[in-house]
Length: 257
Image (cartoon, rainbow, N blue to C red; front, side, top):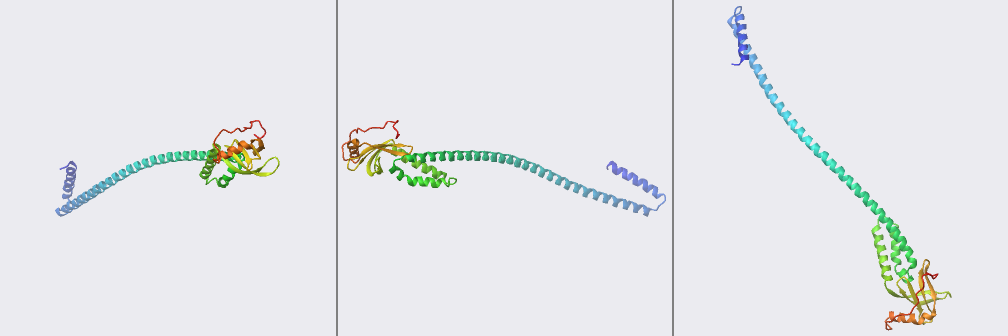
């Protein structure tokens, strides 16, 4: 028997003893019965409280566990947010670099196109006519350079490749132009690259040479070269044995250079 229970019984017996002096046995029995009921009620309330307390502790534990899990997820989200922000920064830097590279490339293409346009003045007329479709295509793409940069580059490369190939070879062209006498004639013209050319008419009576200038090709008549140039034309047409040709090469200081 616990100490508190012994105290309860001592109090009860004391109260009962005092009451028995002025009350009947029946009254005493009633008091004891009420006390027992009161104790049972207190015990029931205590039991229910303990159950509720255990339930509250379980809820508290569950909430605490949930809080810990939420804190962990929050940390993960913060780490992901930091990673996403860093990735976004890197992507923005890459975008900026690409845009800067694109701008630089566009400027280079524009500058190269201007040079190619200037170079057309120096091209032999037959070559310039053959490359005219590419030139027109280049100008067409230039008007839409935001969406056709690659096409412009491809066209420019095709032009430069064609010009370079022509410059590395000797080409025989049939061309019509006029000399100092303003008479238009058709000539056979041997172009030695883009540096110099020699012309002769079909009858071998009119001949001379030409070279490029900032205003186009300038032609100078020299009929004394007709025989040698005609031989060169026959060599180009496989109608004469190959040999060295004796032809003048204009001095760089001449006005037509």
